[in-house]
Length: 100
Image (cartoon, rainbow, N blue to C red; front, side):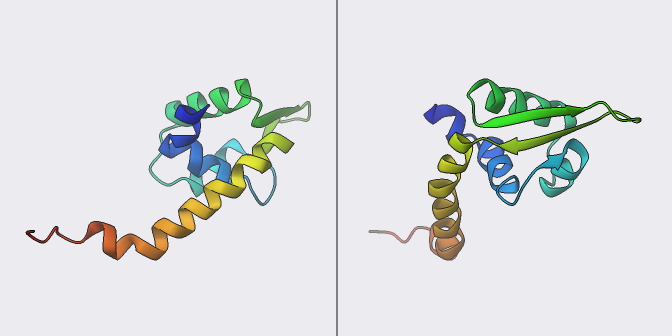
């Protein structure tokens, strides 16, 4: 589970789904730079782990939405805190190392 949550795209997908369900295209637009193949693989892994639920709506045209499960919502809390920490400390973490 830690490997899955530590994956860049998994963590970002969970963050993107915090506010509610999204269709595949909307999720891909939120995750700028992710290919459809990688997004599909990421969503499948999150679904297999019980963090994301995939719902197919038999409308015309057919559409699919992804949303966090209760377990996914509980995982989003520490991931959100980590994202906030990274944003707050980005300047410090990317600064060139000073000689000791």
